[in-house]
Amino acid sequence: MSAARAKQLLHLVFGGEMESLSEVTFKDLDALDIVGIYPDYASAYAAWKAKAQMTVDNAHQRYFIVHMHKLLDPEND
Image (cartoon, rainbow, N blue to C red; front, side, top):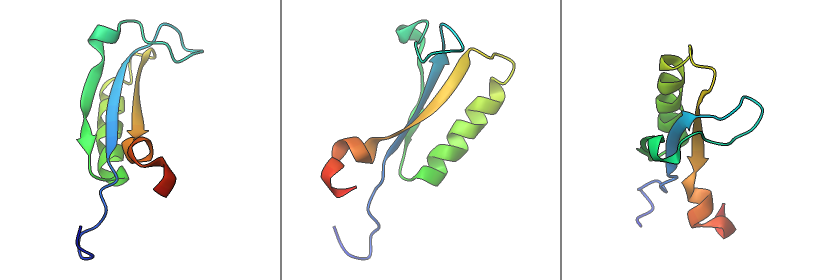
């Protein structure tokens, strides 16, 4: 990678309907909404916010941002 190119910090945005409001257990894993993979946190946050706002009327629907770069290279984070 050249010095001029920024390091990719990949982030995954996904969500789904939860079984309850008190824990993070998805009701149906086959119905998860994989929003996408983004090259930086700002892009992932924008996608997360848009999806969260679209489902604001469903308290059981939640979206998450996963810092994939931390999973791919945990020693250099």
